[in-house]
Length: 278
Ligand code: UDP
Ligand code: MN
Image 1: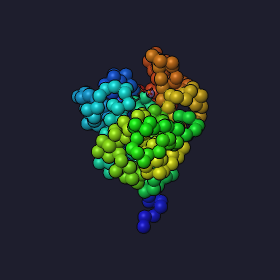
Image 2: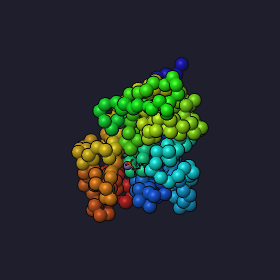
Image 3: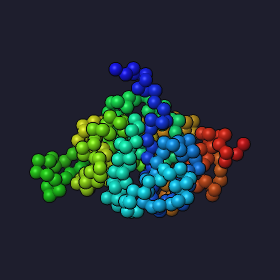
Image 4: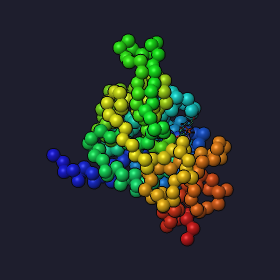
């Protein structure tokens, strides 16, 4: 038997951090990540994209994966990337699978300390739902096998806030989700990748989402996050400037230079970083 403290003594190296991105964002969102939090988790973070970019491949020491999925925001293509992320996690042998979007900032040390509270040898699905009630879906008779129920109710973690899955749980999903099978489930229930993840975990594997409020997506009002709590949060996000601007309120660089506020956030958390003012 393994001593409980040994199980929990996980480090950054036990985590597989995957970031979904696209060629549409390689010149806007990706450079901000590469300049900031990626520097604290270079060996543990992998990007799942839809293009080959030699410059980014060099900058990430070969951590850009061309999924060969289409570069669109359609359900099928986003599910395709998530499916590749999951398969790469299985191959990595790591203890935790943590997914983020490319408009997330990941507070790397905090991600590690929060995961230390959970045993990766047990089944854990950690994240933050976008609404305070479970999602109820109805599957049309023509779209389900004869014996399948007509409706399902379940919680899912918003992909845009990030979520983590323990190895033990990821293993139980193997028969339904591995080797690209995840895409078939997405297509079967006709729902986005993060919803499909929740569906598989709650209805196929029969585990529940554990609410971890330290994950944040731009579905929340970012400016309402208090500065004093930034250190405790796992992830942050932003939207705009093309859509409605939704950014955290943090002092630092000029908003023209740092519209997403992620450079300022990084300097707030890690003031000794090379690009931070001193
Ligand atoms: N994305 C993608 N291909 C696309 C559009 C988006 O892979 O054509 C990725 C994007 O990089 C991000 C995630 O999907 O990681 C969510 O996209 P976005 O933030 O633009 O949309 P949201 O779902 O937050 O409205
Ligand atoms: Mn987004």
